[in-house]
Image 1 (cartoon, rainbow, N blue to C red):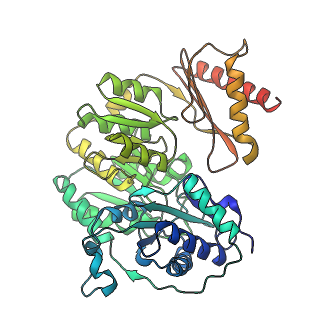
Image 2 (spheres, one colour):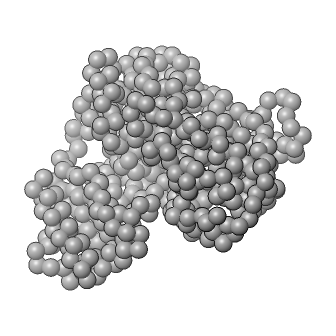
Image 3 (cartoon, one colour):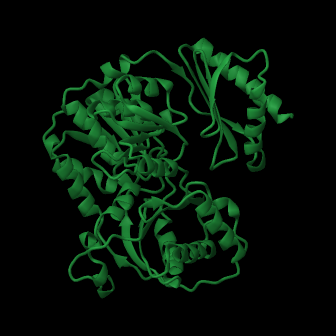
Length: 472
């Protein structure tokens, strides 16, 4: 049975359940990934709320068992809880008595974790986010794994669904309650929209233990997502949260399907990830902050005015996790709401942890609306996606880069071009971004300037140049 190479993406493995991700392909993924991890290693699996996630766990376990791994089963958890497991001794997750297989490893941490999640994709999608030795398994490592699996597509893996159950949720909840015990009894009226995703498996317990005044929306995990799509970066998915805020709340939070992305809402503002970074940096002394190429220039400029060091880097949660470890940075962010704390935390993206860091600011008297209102005015587009093909998208970026060496007369004067991830083209009043998506056959563009007229001018000029580059 052929296995499509398209499921092996830059940051994860992703496809449609029972189509690309079927019993045959998933068992082979487990088998070859188990050998990549090192055979007789300890691998923990968690999964999100999607109805088919437990089936994928069983298929994946068969492949990992065939590779000789010891498999721990977290059950349904948010992705950050899955990441958290990599930083704790194995004994933390075990009841007594435990399997004798684990006795020699009680003081050690797991060797790898696999999160079965479709994140914010439609309900029929699912996939695997992989961590090995506390680092993301991504990029060329995933592509190489895919090539091996495609070449070995005739191999049959027998059923072997053996796993050892563990409890990661309880130590995670305990960690959060202890870390934010100073918020206990906070009087701010809060609203939380879990979107029927995995956030609901731990968030209400933390809120209750901290005795916070909150209303929960759609906290019951349901992988059909019956109330709205679990993607808080889309305004339409925030309608119920906004309504609840107007009625009875002061501050709102929304999560994607696996709770690694966050939206923060006041009655006045939808606070994006780069704006959150500005807020978080208020309580850090001369921090190093990493942003992606889609972040507002306002973020970089304001942080540097305050004495922070800033690093502009590639989009993608795996890229930013590696970069934060490499540089020793305190924080990293994506506009979409991935927030990575190394300050007082472990350096991975955790929307739940970021929630309580926001609440800390509010508890200390910081007026979120006033700070956002005080930022220099800026007009920015949302992401604009230009359809292309997998074969053409990177070639288009190369053609566009060549065209910018001798830009046409109708293009505004260029100050500089940043090439860390696609092309971020800086003009006198703002910037334009054109990059090839690592997960879909599109070019992703974004534009920002101090006013709408300049933003539209940059947009129109770059879109014309993209069309000319297509014809080259």
